[in-house]
Length: 153
Image (cartoon, rainbow, N blue to C red):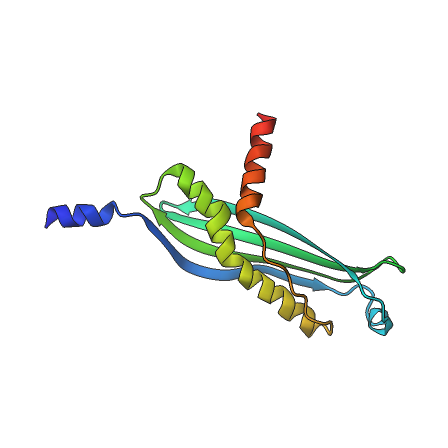
């Protein structure tokens, strides 16, 4: 019986404990005039991720997505929307290197669809057509950040 309990305690653990919106904002600085234009905006998206240990075995991971739509001809911002989608993940009995991979790739892959939906809903409620954000390759992002750190060492 003791051997069974020990085997259970050493099993790798990766679970979602909580998914939540940490921050959500929308700005429409040139309303109502921006609603009178027929010009298609140029949409720019920025993404940042962050993971941190909050207590033994529990990590908080955040994906911040900022979407800005600007009118090129008038150099006016139609809207700026930003969401920080976060999650608390339980990670135990996993190598440190693999934990970093989970925090940089797996967790953001879980959180991004929630962030994408929050941006789309918020922009739609502001009176604009929905913004359909393309999926992100967090593995490539993680690898490029790792190479940047190695290049600075």
